Amino acid sequence: MIKCVAIDDEPIALSIIKEYCNRYGDIELECFTSPVAGMECVRSSKPQIVFLDIEMNSHNGVELAKELPAGTCLIFTTAYANYALDGFNADAVDFLHKPIFYPRFERAMAKAKKYLQYTDSDTAAGFITLKADHKNVVVNLKDIIVIEAMDNYVKIFRKDLPTVVPQITMKDIEAKLPDDSFIRIHRSYIIAVPFIEKFANKTVYMHHFPRPVPAGRKYIAVFNNLNNLIQTK
Image: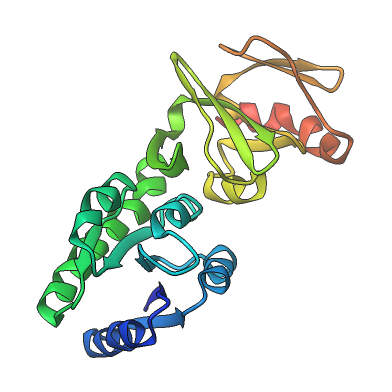
């Protein structure tokens, strides 16, 4: 079952998307005429696909798209063809021009399913997809040395590569990482086990990282188990 959310201030437009989703099958859809309520649902339930109107009375869909969780498959809908470039610049998988006809909807869903297959297989293949600077960025797990918390963002330090600053919480990115290679050592730090150089006195020193990483009081048991973790790698 593919979980979807549709946001459009025109009820008729939502009814068409709902009809097409029912016809397509295997789709769980929630519809919202309120962009605020719709985005709240997106943030809390993290649907796989979001159908988002670009031109709404109170909000602009291109701006709302910047707030979508990383890895969300975005399909823009609009009655104005001149917004197509804005839609693709926002990293949309497809752009549906109203009035939307079912064959075109099917094509959009085919693209969306390919996108979802790609992102779902990322972690197993050694990658994660994150949203940074309003774009989806693919990060190789083997490159990550340290992840540092920054409010609702994190800073990902990579070996011989630029730092990535995606909009994601530590809790959410921790859930994406394999726990045999990454450990949270502090409320503000996740470290990659293969890059550990040495550790002592509640401090971890990492290869290719310029400063020591402290172990938080809550994570002392994890710190004390580092030797066992390293020996199993």
